[in-house]
Image (cartoon, rainbow, N blue to C red; front, side, top):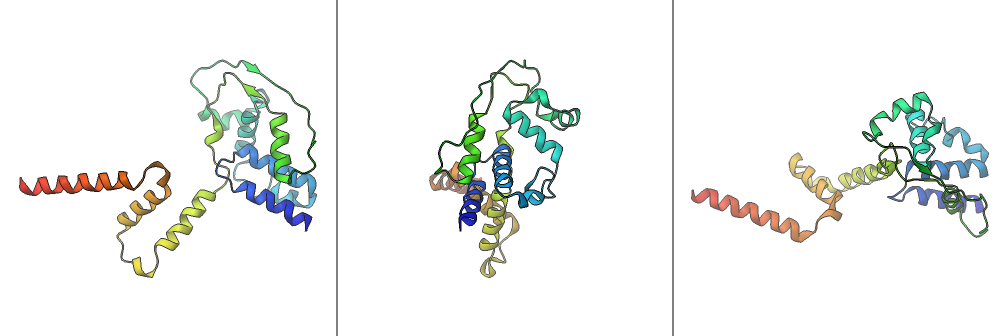
Length: 196
């Protein structure tokens, strides 16, 4: 039962919206360390990784180890560089220990990285936290699309359905008052056009 609890904590941690590529790698590395039989499926060279070199480069940049980029990795992340910036780095080091025995496997992995993390004052690269490591958002959207496009709505125009899905996916950016204001202004515009 302990194994299932450990793996469930990692699964839930992976589903968080704010997970970075580095967070996912730390979680997977912790699982591999605890359960070595998972290395073939979760290791750095696993078949689920689309581009090992790019992922490795992003992880090094997020850790602050830009000077350790290989030539291949540098080429892969060329588009993520700022135009011109200096590489002044200040690092803080912490000791790697798991003082809290009550932490879940996921919490241990993320805490360990925070303890040994480095920060950069000025970086040659843009902030890479926008790179999404998983397709959770896409999976949710397709699930909602399947639910929304049921047998009663099969005759919905694709453009209307796309608009509805876009609004639903981005609902955190606006509320019903905003949508009502837009619809009302469009109706007013149409009425003015008919009088002319």
